[in-house]
Amino acid sequence: GPLLAISGVTRRYGRAARAVTALGPLDLRVDPGEFVAVVGPSGSGKSTLLRLVAGFDQPSSGTVRLAGRPPVPGRGVGVVFQQPRLFPWHTVRQNIAVALRWAGVPAAERPRRTAQLLALVGLGELGRRRVWEVSGGQQQRVAIARALATAPALLLLDEPFAALDALTRERLQEDIRALTRRSGQAAVFVTHSVAEAVFLANRVVVLSDRPGRVVLDLEIPLPRTGV
Ligand code: ADP
Ligand code: ADP
Image (cartoon, rainbow, N blue to C red; front, side, top):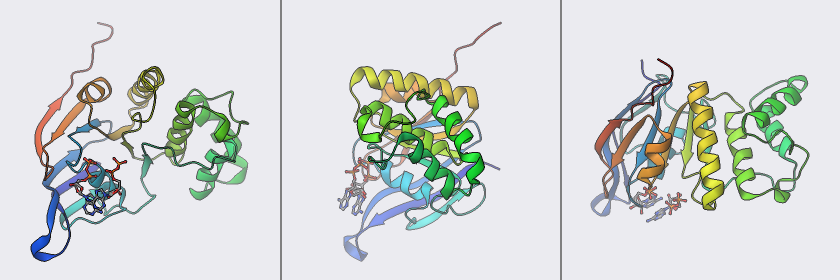
């Protein structure tokens, strides 16, 4: 079956007669290997959707299934937020190692796995630096490495480039695109930027405003390589 199955999901806020529907009804399926961008204006429910998929929040109606099961926070998904949520006074390596520890990776394996993850996001040289000493773009790379530490079936990206300057953003976008295409990492990426969505994803889902509903669902053909 699909990696992610969202069926008839709504999320309402507030009580009874004054309740406002923020999202849905929404149906969305994501298969392994898909990189889906969810685009919509501010207030269309993108963050709400990611919280439901991550298991941080429950739908008002309908079901969310990750590999056939209701999502449990911290299991099966890695989440990257707009602002990296790191321990700034710890080193880059420590920030990754702690995620590996939470994931139950034995202490003896953590240094090697940490080095692999840092190399993956282009931070091989910075492991010993304190997080507050490295740039915003490098901090976001640490956050991505940490999200990947548990080898999640699904990566959730909530406007991860929004706080970066233009050049840093472009470099990170190119690296994430290369990384996810190479590894076939499934991801759901929310953004209000159509250009960002089309550049990164192989499928773009457009949400309408208030309440967020799917108004367009497009495959982006990959450029052909070789023959
Ligand atoms: P987006 O991420 O696309 O900007 P959100 O998911 O943050 O959209 O919000 C969707 C709608 O739900 C907005 O109208 C927002 O004000 C409302 N909303 C989100 N979270 C809450 C909340 N905790 N309580 C009440 N309304 C909320
Ligand atoms: P971001 O785009 O960084 O997710 P948002 O403005 O969408 O920031 O939302 C930040 C937080 O505020 C979210 O947790 C969301 O649930 C909450 N929120 C958004 N809109 C409302 C609202 N109208 N009432 C209460 N909480 C809200």
